[in-house]
Figure 1: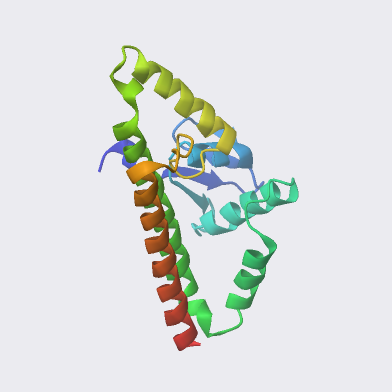
Figure 2: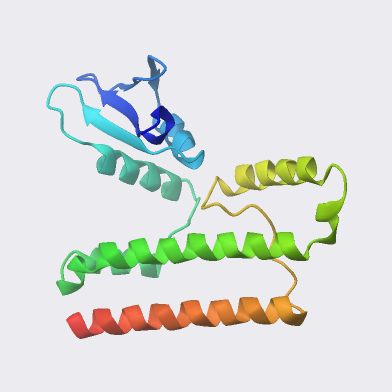
Length: 185
């Protein structure tokens, strides 16, 4: 496995300071969030015990962003998450969330592929540089959420129908997952 494919190892010292083992310097939670937004996986371990603290720190990053008003998680989603810890849905929730985010990333990728196919400017000289600039801007504006790197295409003609069909397919799949969860309850 290539070095960049390995998770970035962060060690937590007894003083609670976080140490980046690749750059040999101390990092903050915001630095770690930046690594993740840039597409890097991280692993945070306690230096003394060797315990994996990644989940704890990722939850802390999310909580800090939510408390600053950067609300990504609607109240009903947070409520459902709390409920999932107390009922039989707890065993299905991690799989459901993973599948939902995977479908979200896939739909973003498909949308970007469709945009490239239908964009007449893509054949113009210098288009790639402008596109890269746009991606960097949008990534900065969205905090690197997912891999989305462009505005939604116009919903007209055949392309609009294809997107509507994809959306309907995603809704159908989510309804199927909900049905399966309801049966397990």
